[in-house]
Image (cartoon, rainbow, N blue to C red; front, side, top):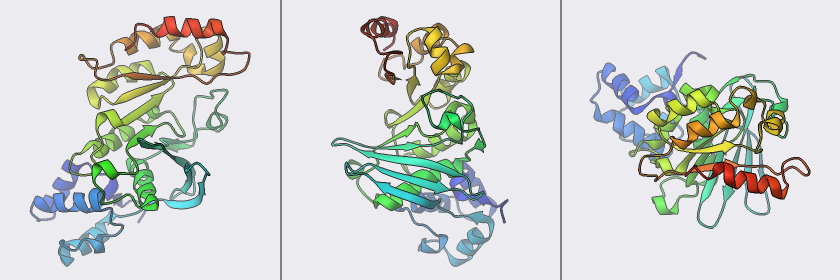
Length: 290
């Protein structure tokens, strides 16, 4: 049973192929896609315009699952955090941050992490494994269930932005993360725009160069220092791809028309990277970047 493919791991084209291989008309795949990602149903049996024979086949051959909620906390300011339990009992966190003009869902891409960033709690944990496409999409679907965020007009959505900024380094789970992004971008389903999806990375330079040509979403860079000596301590991946090399890759990342911008993340640590001199160097360092 554990080897059954989850329907939420399939791209639309893969779902179409599966449906055609079942001897069904291609339009059935569109119906299924809408049930999954517009209506947000939680079982195949709720798909009322899908014949019983096909529904029975889907129940037999494809998994239809949400993530289990181990813990759900709601802050006074409306921020919500879920601790999701996966099939193998591993756990990941997802956070929803509501603001006046947007609602941002911060999702995880790995169980644990390899990067050991000194200020990050996940960095104290070993990397257990990458999340599957199904588990990445599952965070979003289960959060939408919890927030009652289905069947709403786009302007009334609660989750308007998705950020890969939870547990793990997304670029070290490249294939599953980019597949999940393609599901998020599909305009007949969840229908998020490239501007509304941000991928946060510590700076895996070769994969940043590859990413633009695959999905071209917005980037957020965990910088946290203005010189290599301090960044080597805070973000050890800097020893492999130092600041100069990282910024060179970023200068050519945004779209030719400069429509896309890069966000830089900088946690200020008292007495380490927060001086006025650091601030001035930061401005100068980032000047060439759009």
